[in-house]
Length: 228
Image 1 (tube, helix red, strand yellow):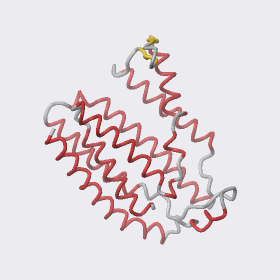
Image 2 (tube, helix red, strand yellow):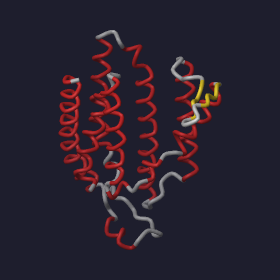
Image 3 (cartoon, one colour):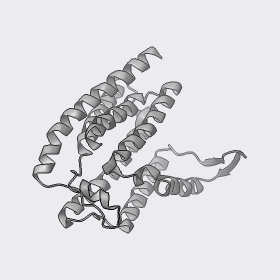
Image 4 (cartoon, one colour):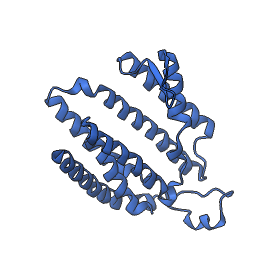
């Protein structure tokens, strides 16, 4: 447990420092290229003062996190444990794919010079497509359960198709953190809470993924310094 906590602290602080440095370099570049956020006209009037806040700043914390993830997989590969982390690798790829949707959305906003990049329908279709692909690959590699246990009544529902259907809804529709207002720093603070949950559970279960959860926490803390 002591070693896990040390890993938690070192990884969190390391990625925090990398992100703080990266954002210090990235944000002036985004400002120089006028990569600023447009504010919806339907929003409150006081939001207009935030127009021009640099968008795509998430690159500054995503890259340090992926760097830590890269070295983590090198470590488990050297230890001969790579097959055990196939589900985690696929999940990270899924997260990166969703991040790519966000990148394209922000890029379209810059091109159009307006708040809306991809339409809601386009984003929803892309999220469903990526999630369906992720679940199919997880199933193909034997990393999906074949039943769902309904909480409280402990009723099992068996069948891979049922699991995929429910997972699609859970992954795409129940997506509350994605709807917070990132321009106010809420996206960072909400996602930090989620990442902290996964880190604590990982440490408690000794699952071995705490470096990645901690990397996300450190990256988001570094991002939050500028996001607020």
